[in-house]
Length: 219
Image 1: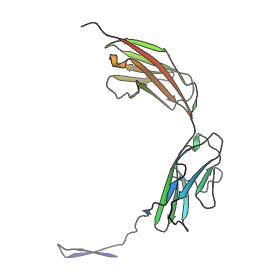
Image 2: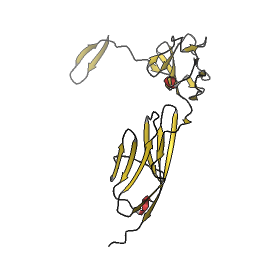
Image 3: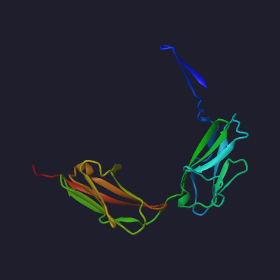
Image 4: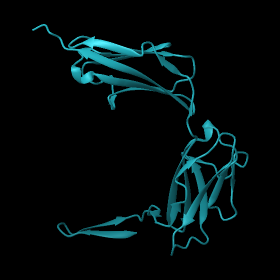
């Protein structure tokens, strides 16, 4: 027990000892923190022990997200020293965050990895019109047609700025076969181009639409 004395009252309180949480140490680093694999090929993730660090007698555990994968031998292998994990066959299910963690006594250290597959181009979208014209103050409507592939994310960028449906004067409708961006009151600053990007499962596609505008002569 620990004895705590409160000077102002003279009260003495016995407090049960509590276990200290494991302290984090700076022993490990990721050799390839941004690891890019290739479909159906193995990929190695390696933790390096920093100079001067001693992890002898430590226990090394590997995680995919929060899942302990150290003993999932059908999908992964771990080197004898525990510091290299091999993903036996890369696919989209193996992408994500990984980490190795070593515990020595009441201290531990971690190194993190981001595992991904290179994106490949796939025909996911195409513009309904390659170019669109507007009159200042009027609506500007841009549309892309979905071509049937799996789309996990789709977004617009106009003149290099990402557009959100939460932006003032913007509407974005995302339907089964069409995605539509509407600028409710276009200005001449909107002249240029908008690019729609679609990300699929390890795939991507873009569609660019040129934009021209005319000054509204009505005063």
